[in-house]
Amino acid sequence: MFAAGSFLAPEKAHADFRVCNTTQNLVGVALGYRAKTGWITEGWWHVNPSSCTTLVVGPLTSRYYYLYAEDAQSGGRWDGKVNMCVAENQFKITGINDCFARGFQRSGFQEYDTGEQTSWMVQLTEETPPSSPIVTDTPPQ
Image (cartoon, rainbow, N blue to C red; front, side):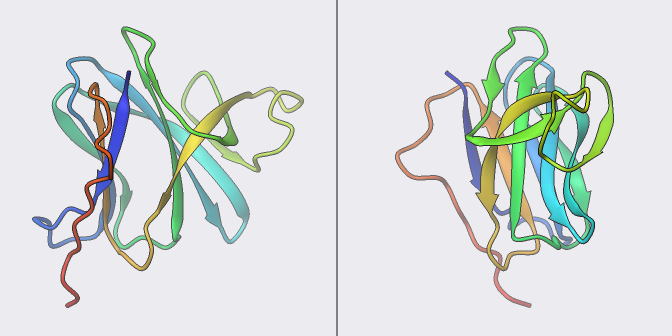
């Protein structure tokens, strides 16, 4: 079973949205968010084993971000209940409705409420998730 824990990166002074892959396999990641033009999904970022990748550079502009990830070798998934559009290859899609009719696929994304934070990190693991997510705050500056 795959789990995704989320927490802020207190060791980083800069703001961003990062995904860390603690598995031994390559992981493909897609991100969804609300922009001024409407809902956007984009991907695929490739996150190598035991490494991190920044998906959003700079301070977060949305409160909610949505993540979907797939293990490239075993087919395992980190997903959720929020349906959004994805494509087979690299993509940036506006809108989350009528995915199939528009030639896309639909996947369930996990929602992350970043609150007022300007930085956020999601850690993809192969372990069962802890009873409560690990969340640490970065002190206000």
